[in-house]
Amino acid sequence: MFKKILIANRGEIALRIIRACKEMGIKTVAVHSTADANSLHVRFADQSVCIGPAKSADSYLNVPSIISAAEITDTEAIHPGYGFLAENASFAEVCNSTGIRFIGPSPDSIKLMGDKAKARETAQKAGVPVLPGSDGVVTEESSAIEIARNLGFPVIVKAAAGGGGKGMRVVMSEADFANAFVMAQAEALAAFSNADVYIEKYILQPRHIEIQIMADEKGHAVYLGERECSIQRRHQKLIEEAPSVIVDAGLRREMGEMAVSIAKTVRYRNAGTIEFLMDENNKFYFMEMNTRIQVEHPVTEMVTRIDLVKEQIRVAAGMPLSFTQDQIRVEGHSIECRINAEDPEKFTPCPGTITAFNPPGGLGVRVETAAYTQYVIPPYYDSMIAKLIVYAATRDEAIMRMQRALDEFIIEGVKTTIPMHKVILSDPDFQKGDISTKFMERYGNPSK
Amino acid sequence: MNLKEIKELIEMLKGTDISELEIERSGVKVRLRKGGDVTFHPVMPRMEYPPAAIVAPAVTEAPPTPAEKPVEPMKTNQIKVTAPIVGTFYRASSPDKPPYVEVGDTVKKGQVLCIIEAMKLMNEIESETSGKIVQILMENGQPVEYGQPLFTIEPM
Image 1 (tube, each protein chain N blue to C red):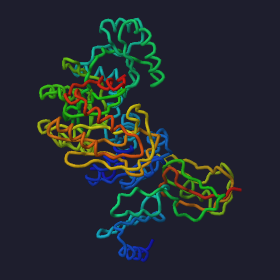
Image 2 (cartoon, rainbow over the protein chains, first blue to last red):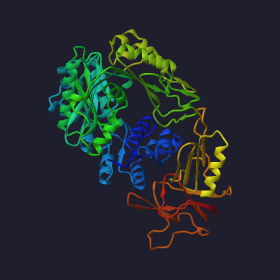
Image 3 (tube, each protein chain N blue to C red):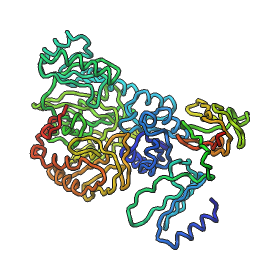
């Protein structure tokens, strides 16, 4: 087992990883920018190293600085968290070549599944349904329009190198296609330095269902149930839950086995998530794979009672999975609300000083946060203040518990999205589980 | 920080209702907890951390605001040379060579002051100003973080 792990991240996920390490008796090294010198993750780690000025590019994305910090602290492994360098294949490569273990999949897996078009091909090879679409990248407008006609409108044009909801254009009818195609290529080039685009059938009221997988070095892979993340705004998730109301045990097994089959096809290691879109007829299609631990991993932990971060560390250290597929049981219901320092109506970020901070408690409430009273939210990074997670025996009870917890959550000094979460949780359709990725449109927030 | 000073600290603590006291000085950190153990460990000097952090028992208090590290009082025209990268500080280009600079030396702008080794590469750190070396704040072979104060220079 590792003696010392460096956490190449900040905020709540850095704390999450430090906690897992502490409980495993592993020493921790926090890295931070000058703006994060007073962060909780710096305070709670055994050692800390300032790696650069405030801007992410000069600090949390600064590979030489982070590797150097690992060297001077005799770090054995690096956990990249999510975002930043978590899905940067060259960072994973540099770690490996420097003799530092990267806690995550191999650089090849990251590269392969990070290419959206190649990931689609991989899923197809593994026998997993994908949204009908072009076979890889389309460069000519004449072939593109033909493909779109065959698929039937609406279609979506997507950047092959894109992700996180960026570089996509929905085309509702043939009349709009030519223009949209050219624009999509231009946007892809501007955003990702890569004009490659592909085309997919577009589902009008999809549900976003994702499967958590975990695999060890020996090639054993399991699925840990699904999460539904349909409540989104501009492709940014707001609320996640496990399990999904529309996924029964049979469907869970079917989707889970498909996800595991993809993992085995690419010899995947460590934690990963396969995202599916589900249409109105409960047919599911592969969307993309995220080769990292995800923000919303806690809801899976609550319903399976498995510590995913500890498991990541174990498999990275070469240990076999701590559980078999049969031992994984999804029980009860968990919901997570992402609480951001944003205007609850305009969603514009509102950094500033938190003058009062009192998180909720009580049975079945879990808060993942690096905030505290007098904490100054820096303007350089994302606006997430906390993740509020609840667990209960049923979905109805989980909703009541979340409403109760949101009422108790005191955050003063900055605007937060707590009021918006309260509105969503009282929505009759949400309470019935009648949701899709278009849900937020009723609150004036376009989902695209 | 010596045993006598620690004993004095412990005595001082007894008379108060402070339950935990943490003091950092010259690269050594001591945390005293009533009813608990005394931990004594060398820590990497941090630029932005205050020299003493006192945790009040009952009230949830915010972590203290950053203060300057306790170095020799700097005259206002003196400037600090700080580490622009993370790595290991070396005073000479190799173990058998003399140090680039000593206290009292006059340096020119662009003159190499030290090496910071990072990922097996030796990076020469150059002076931004001409002046006199007043203090050398790190020891040969010590790890440094971004922003770590290395030298104090009096510009000329």
